[in-house]
Image (cartoon, helix red, strand yellow):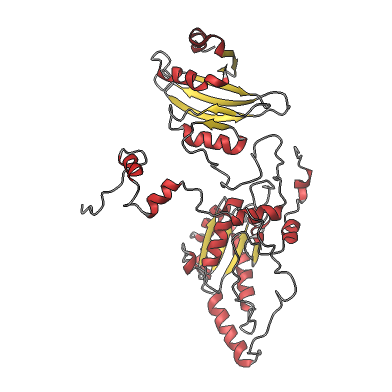
Length: 210
Length: 210
C-alpha cells in the first residue's frame, strides 16, 4: 500500500474566501436572503445512523418532536437527493471511505451535522478501530454534543445550521466548491488529524499494553 | 465432569491432555495437531453426537508464558450436553491449527474472525480472509496482548489507510462475480452454485411470471 500524498489543503492559497465576479450589493443580498430562507426551511436529511444516536434521531423524526416542523420530514435515503448528512453515531475506520463516498455523492448545496460524542470526537471509543471524529474524513458544519443527544439537542443543532445557512452568500465563490480527493488522500493535513485525535479527558488515563 | 471425557481418553489416549470443570462446564484440552480428528469423532460418534458448533474463539493470557488457546464450544442438540474443547498453541511456534469447516459450515466466519483478531491460521480453510477489519489492514491482530489499544500507526496514517481501502473489497471474488455477471460464470463455479453451495442461480432467459 502506497502512503499516498499528504494533503496540503491548509497551506497557502486554500481556505481563503475569494469574492467572485459579483461583489455583494443590494440585489445579491436580497437574493441571498430568499435563497437561504428557502434552503434552510427545506433541508432533506440523509440519515447515516451507525449507533444509538440513530435511535434519538428517529425519536426526533417521530411525532412528539416532529422534524417536519423544520421542513425535514422527507428523509433522503439516497445521498443524491439529500442536503444534510446527519452522522448519528460512531464512525469506524471501515466506514470512513463509505461516508466520504456518500458525502461526495450529495449534490451542492450540502451540509453535515455530526450528532453525538462519538461522531464528533470518537467519544469513549479511543481505540484502534474508530475515527476520532468524522471531521477527519468529511467537513462538518454543526457538532451536537451528547451521548446520545436528546431530540431537543439535535433540534437545536438543526436550528444552528439554519442560522449558519442564513448567513451564507453567493458572493463567496469558495463556499460551494467541490474538492475531489483521491482514495487515501486526507481532507486536512496529517498533523491536524493527529491533533484532533489526541486523547482527552479520562481517555488519557487508559493503560496501554505496549 | 462430562462422561464424554472418559470416552475421549479411551479413544485417543495421550492426545487428550487434561480435563477440568469450570463453572459447571467441562473443559478438555486436546493435542493441537489432532483437533479435527477429535472433533470429528465427537460429532460423528452416535453416543456423543455433538452436532452443533456454538462458537470458535481464542484466548490469550496476560502473562507471556501461557500458550494461546483455541476454544471450541460444542453442544449436542439431541442430548442437551455441552463440551468445551481447547487446543493450546505455544507462542514460539507457528500459530496453526486445522480448520473444522469440513465438519461444520458454521466455523467459516468464526475461524475468519479468530484469524482476524489473533492471527491464528486455520489450515484448509476455504476462504481465510479478515472478517471485521478490512483486508489490507496492516497493523497486526488487534486482540493480541502485544497490540496497543489505539493501534500501531498514527491517527493520520490510520485515517489515510482506511480511506485508501475499497469499501467493496470485503466481498469474495465469487460474490462479486455473482453480483455483476450472473449469467456467464465459469463452468466450475456455475456447477458449484447449481449444487446449491451458495444459494440458487436463476436459469438464463427464463422469467418467473408467477
